[in-house]
Image 1 (cartoon, helix red, strand yellow):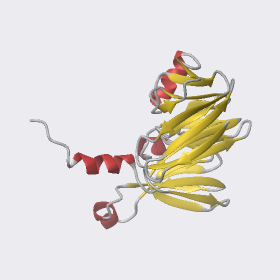
Image 2 (tube, rainbow, N blue to C red; image 1 turned 180 degrees about the horizontal axis):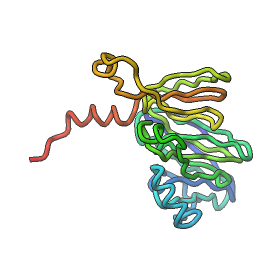
Image 3 (cartoon, rainbow, N blue to C red; image 1 turned 60 degrees about the horizontal axis):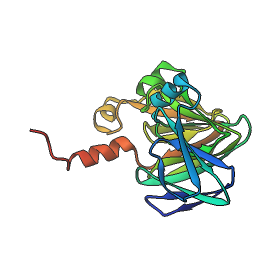
Image 4 (cartoon, helix red, strand yellow; image 1 turned 135 degrees about the horizontal axis):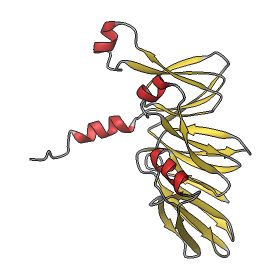
Length: 226
């Protein structure tokens, strides 16, 4: 399997497959493909895992794209302005992602829901209790909103992040929710009552745009009912 990421703001992912190779994605995730690619839709892992994926922001069904002969092409497109991030996962290596981040992956990569263990993080963390967890071996691709900044946190090093801007992190990173201090900060700071707090060791990926903010801006220009 080979790939190429094209574009800047609304990127596309070209995946070149050899005979017998396969990628999977959520239903509706493919943009175009060559004639020697077959597709098969199914509820990978059974009903319970399908429901888990749905809770984590993906579709109940997944679609397998397999190259039948020679060399084939499958192209996947971003659903919002942002960046496509490739993940080279070793056997047993995992990555925790926000809802709707998953784009596609090799058949050896497992996609499942991930629960935030702490009540505060689940209630006020911007994405709820349920996130996505990708586990190798294999290559997976996620789509994140806006521009992406990656930090390598050392043990004990900490960042406070406006909820919603935390796009992805390694399982070694500790995630929690903290309260914004100061009445004026809470009322007039524009960041709300809570911030996400991440502590090392491990890598974190922050996104410059949140889908909630984008939806709020667009809503101003939508015709109102009535």
